[in-house]
Length: 294
Figure (cartoon, rainbow, N blue to C red):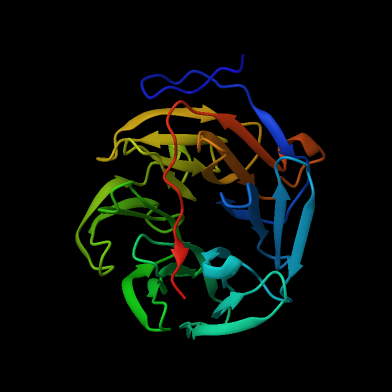
């Protein structure tokens, strides 16, 4: 029987290799519960991948430009962040519809981590590798764009608790912080922003995140080869060491939402075992992802 990670200890669960493949930047894992498949993107390749967990069938869709993140949308579509645009994409027909265009302060900037919130909007940040001009945006189903936060280097770590009352967000470079807001799922309004973690490189700079139903925030630490588990108040509860050189984001999936999938970016080593997508089991289900309401 595979070991599982419990809430009160840092035992090492059994790791399963889901995809043994090297991606430029494997990111944004999304569990599609209706189709029982895992989706993820390779950012520089501009490709979204899909894996049917039951039979191993693979699909891929190419966009011709970087695909930093995406989420599920109504009618089997996907809401996809490109370099500047947020688009609706129909995997069946290949049709695209531009929802919003975001103008960056510098030509080399692009969008980054994004997720659909409990409010049905697409929340997406940008990245400014050489400064702090990145922002966090809320893109509404009607195409409206609201700037939520500024002064960021690499916007990352978006996740919501099960009740939809807390929003987590991080900066993977710059200050390397993890913040939390109070969140109104009915309106998408945020308030009471506070700092939970600040410049804690020892545990791995904060990258992609996800929440379980008991309120624990799971955060990839790519510079420490681990997935960290933080309390709702930012206390480190434990971590899982993973056989990936640079894990980028966890997501919960599987029929019982207790399988944690983890993507990774190119290890740039000769050891192919440090790349790909892995999974392990947890004893607490994750929070299901929402759908873009358009």
